[in-house]
Image 1 (cartoon, helix red, strand yellow):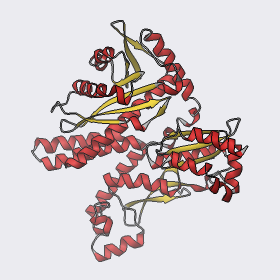
Image 2 (cartoon, rainbow, N blue to C red):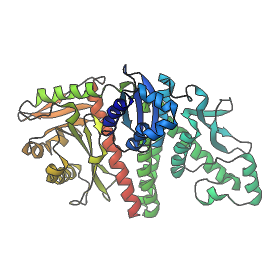
Image 3 (cartoon, helix red, strand yellow):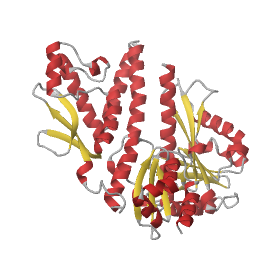
Image 4 (cartoon, rainbow, N blue to C red):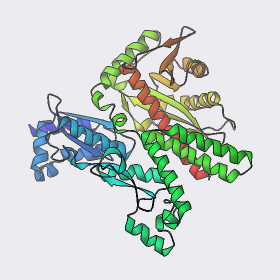
Length: 441
């Protein structure tokens, strides 16, 4: 009996990618038995079907005897994986997750003013009336990941008062000050002012108020460029690229967990999307098999003319398949032209139809204008193509030579799947763009 169970689970594990994410064991009624997190999902799941490990772990053995299904979803960052894991445990109270079922493991980001008038950032479990708080986040580890990334962009003080006054007396900053990760408010009033201004920016960032910060940075970059202070302008340009990247990664707990309630809705979303595609593209060959239905999303990422990149991500059976993520450094243009860049990306991608596979649906970011520049390429290959305009999440397609606008309600599962893919390809392309900028500097 146990051997049969292990064989069934092993077949499911073979379909799981070896990427970071969350995994769930479920019983015959699809009740969640256990929630786990792994950097390499498939490798971690094999642990649970290893007979030698099961012999040494009675509790794991008992759980496996009850398990029938394995669900998983991929995550992009450590913060996302941690938050989702802890929130699932909190929500579903799985019987085999012995800890983390209450709020005791959750911590807050605390911003508090010290006696010297400089603000510092740290963590806390309880709120007081003397500080500002953000969160809660699952454990100090998750908070550290968020603040570590923010600190690379906006330096801030996080030291104790004892350490602060020690370095004030020494009249020199600590290692973080030397590394540029702290404005060193221990060294004087000018540094205190800089630190407090940075902390104010971080508050806005944690509230999601990015636009005000970015507007000010772009204004300063324009000023420096106008006055031929190109090094200062380039420094702000690179910070803007990092800001864009970081703001894509950091989301509130509620946003990160938006898809948790829809873990079982992938099939429904895919069924709805296939129904829509078949309605509009009746003459096109569309793969109706859910587990093989292949969607490719494309995006162009640039911040100016210096580096322009294209990105492609793939969903197979409604799941992200990172074996078919691709990056394209645009070769044939030196000025920003997203239309031409997308044409170049698709021409290069279509050279690999045999070895990469043929998409059932191709999705690009944009409206009718963007679609009109690539639809002839896709029609030549008999591939269904649509665009998704971000402003109102409107779908555009071409049917029988005419462009059609399709307005789906935001609650529509097919639209949610398209938005999820669009956001992922944007994240992937932005990450590549940032990497190339770092190399080129």
